[in-house]
Image (cartoon, rainbow, N blue to C red; front, side, top):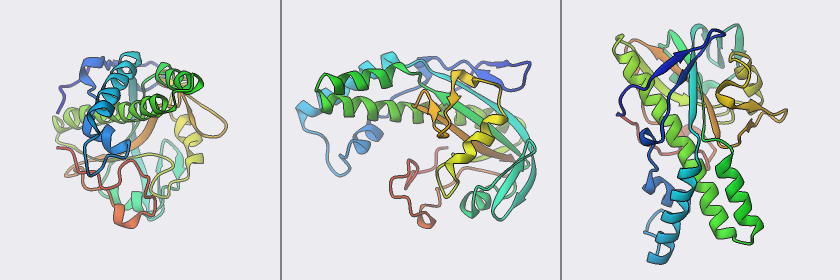
Length: 241
């Protein structure tokens, strides 16, 4: 688990984290799996191409992250209420938040440059490079979110509290349009991330999520057996200690 990150309190609410590139690592196994190499390693030439492209994308990242804590006002079978907002998360998420007393709303991003570089590769008729670059950017965004998650787990463990998995709008039956309500709980342009009318974030390689907090809570396997989304980022992911 990564060490605690430096925190900066905002007067308008929320915490900004220092997220230097040396605390975020590119998971090479996750990247090759995301590229479709699930049961075998890429050929030598392709492996080198993946490695060099991923390194280029990593060097373009501008990691930013932050969170805000809320009391859990209500937990129902179909959703939760925090910050005066009711989120219809669906039963898969609400069940996994049982026992939570608080919730963290977190946001992280790798910035706009990786996505722009991927688009440039495709425009220059290098679709394979563009696909690798785009996939590497997605994996790095997920690794940034994991780094924030680990920071919260470590910080709250010192207070005798545990954390649940993280859950994002658009997954586990939670309507992505509820992203608008989630961002109402955060300062404007939090972590330099803005929400579009479509409920997608800009920069695109950004992640928002809620994490339950409470005594005795811990991360667990995601309830993939109850989920119909075969493309989910967390499907069959193992818990992180």
